[in-house]
Length: 140
Image (cartoon, rainbow, N blue to C red):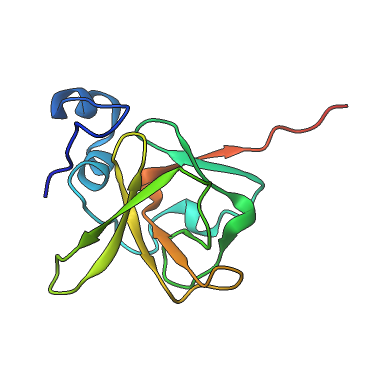
């Protein structure tokens, strides 16, 4: 399942992506893979900050919307406005809503309708698709 590179602001060839991503990041972000549950240190990270796309750096989620879903993947109830896009994923003999970065098209995970209020959504993300950027300490 390939992502169309024509509709995204950041586009690279597979070779160029392989130069900037780890093999696991490439497998997940560019080939729609899934990391094993419980393997991402970001699952249990609750520091203040922002979760950005590991491929292009676009901010995707804030720590304020993160919650413990118990699934073994970092989960959020809402993305930053305009940061993500979705497509229908019919792999694995089911229909799911795939979440990808709106800037580079990188596969992030899936969204489900069993999350907490106020949205009722669970954005179940691959930690390897994300980079956590801690909030800068205020030295004022």
